Image 1 (cartoon, rainbow, N blue to C red):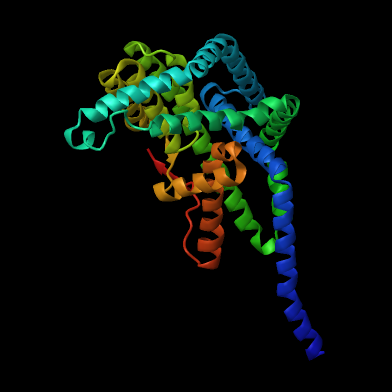
Image 2 (image 1 turned 60 degrees about the vertical axis):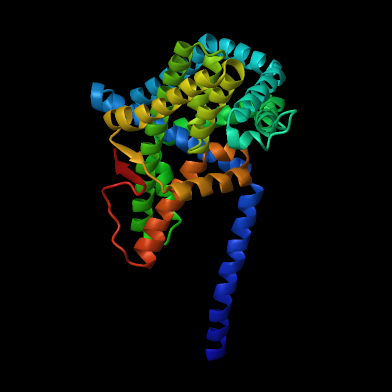
Length: 362
């Protein structure tokens, strides 16, 4: 008997190791499906936030609020596609068509600017700089073009996945308790309270991120469009939409949405206009972060910058363009799990039950 118990104790770690390897292999093989499910969860949190807002402000019942949220969201999406998408598509198409000319003008203006600096002009050859920046910008545009090709090529599959995300999000937001209870049911009884607290914390934190992200995208896109239009920058609508969409990617989205129109203005109109465009971009982000956000949001997701940048790079490398969009929610998920399971359960640290893990007051 002692020998049997010893073998059982030795077999337990091996069994857990085999299970962990099997789960990891399953995740790797089904990563596309898991990303679709994760998008559905994020959309469900968004719809639930709208339904909750309508309930608190107008007293709308949850079911009717959910239906109104879906109808309003689809109506807004259709309105954007009908009213703005054609103009944006024309501007983007014209920009890509004339991109070589703009990059050549940018090279010439950069050469002229470099020659005006005494210490730097000595190292510049007579025929100008080799145009590394323009080449880099061309590579960036090529990356986005190549990243979008799979979604355009497999349009039917993309449409099916989009409808699946919407349907799953509606069911998740309509009966969240069913799925929460299902997850909790597979957890050992002694850990079910921890599972419920972790899921509640994750839901609250994701809601803070979704609300803040939607507001930030609308404000950044609208303010950038108005600012570039006031300065007379061509393709102002395309750059404004890009600024709103790029807000999904922390740090890198802000950087590119500020620098790209400034570099375009440098190539087309010279240094004064480029500095004005750069000032507009910086001013728009400062207004959104320090003036508007504290007024319209109660809490915001606050991740350490180094962790955020490293996480975006890693998740983008693993999952491609879709990974850049869900990088912050994945980091939020990891942070909540670490806070509750590792810090709270393993280390015994006190975990707050009233405040979302990754959020701070604005």
